Image (cartoon, rainbow, N blue to C red; front, side, top):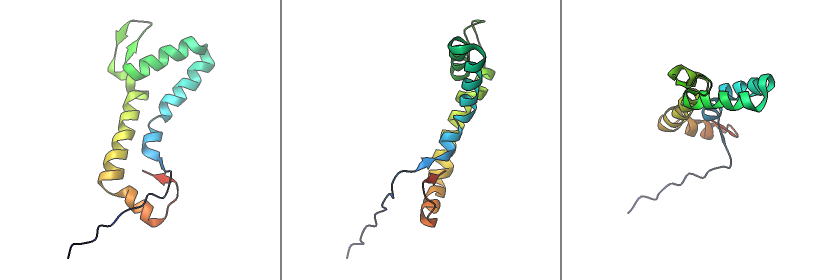
Length: 102
């Protein structure tokens, strides 16, 4: 006889903490930039932190992305490899931890 397939039922909405945590440094930069210089400084700093390009000096530097794009990518990679590939998210679900996943 054929083996019956097991189905995993998703219990509802979950929040991927590693992916959300990657946006925390960028959020802090955005808040302080807006408080110090308004929308103009906010736009310049967001551009610099996400792309590495500084519009004021018209230069590009990899170090500018240290509080923007790099933490976001690191959080998404941690969510993908640690949470999904290693099975940590499944362990959290089986343990009954509500709403939170890695």
